[in-house]
Length: 385
Length: 161
Image (cartoon, rainbow over all chains, first blue to last red; front, side):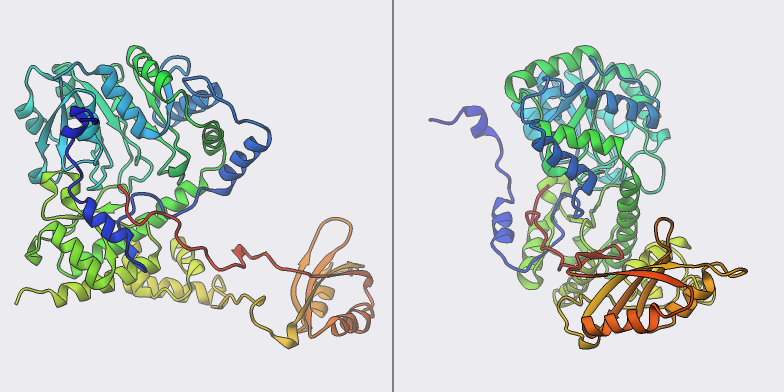
């Protein structure tokens, strides 16, 4: 056997076949894309181009350009009042995806457990598995896809070392208020858990201010705060993210990072500096646009009979499709074949995603309107007789 | 209510119902706000942006930017003479500027001769116009915030997490 047992044991994505179907089809309106439909603001692109012209084509320090770490530190301090030392509490990574891998590999001994919500973002389980950890899935279906202190208490055992939070969440759009985070934090402190907090969608919180859990009392020293530039600045392809946290964990992560990734691409890092230094008006403009689209799609979906609570943030809705009588994959396949609209079956995000599909509203209003018309027709055509 | 303007500026065809939905306002309130904007002259009119590079309009085939130096008039400044000028239908835009000249005009005509005739016969002969410099426009790339090129197709992969 050429492939390692571990990789062989990794569960294949159950919906690969569905993906192939989408990619092979023409003229699809896709609500299945997990990235902004905006292109990176021009001042950022231009600074990236200029950096190449200047000959900035080398490695950077493993931790990332000092200037970027300094800007990140200032940005978080100004926005949330949390102080991270750019020397040893911030690591620049190739996106949050890498940062998550690093932190799990950095803290987990074989068999140690991580609490994760089910459903959750697709990489959480496989990355924990590859890091040798065990995932404790917490079914959040009855709490509106939110982790609560009582749910977590039920899952606590001696083996649990960390909790992985993601808010606003992909795929549900759910987020936590400061009060909810305070309640959670008390439990985390009491049980001495490490908190890994993926807050990549923080800028896209629509109805209340976003609170990083690391800003709460007693949390900074036990939290690894993950964020990046992909969503707020529409920079997915630039691959720049960062991890901020206690020195020992950041140092462990840097150790792995220096031997595997070396550093995030320098052009991306230069672009990220510009993103933090430049005007933020377009971040707010994009946010206003997403908010309008959210109102539109939530209103339309409920009108056509799919139960869809209003998400707090990100750019996803996660409606229930149970009353169609179809399961998630069947719904997604039929919708694709009959109306050429692509959505992601909820089961891609865990067993508790069944009966749901994820739709991204990171598409133009024109496309969203057309997609809703098609879905309405689809539901009528497939109504149970 | 400013958000209504932001939405209409992007797409003037958005209906009050659609605006009401995305802004969480009542349809009547949106209609009333739009009426007020129209009445107050905040919304002047609703137009379509046409990429004239692709449509031949023979009566307006040539465009020129004209710098005009003006002697201001007592009691009126530049306003009076500007009005004399911008009332000509050939004048598409008219701005008062700081710097080495006073008015910047955008003028359209059927051909170079037509524009030249406008400059030499109508514009330069006005009493307070002290001199003009005419630049013929070769190509338009972007106008009033709109890039004059068809939007490129979505480059994202059709499905991702």
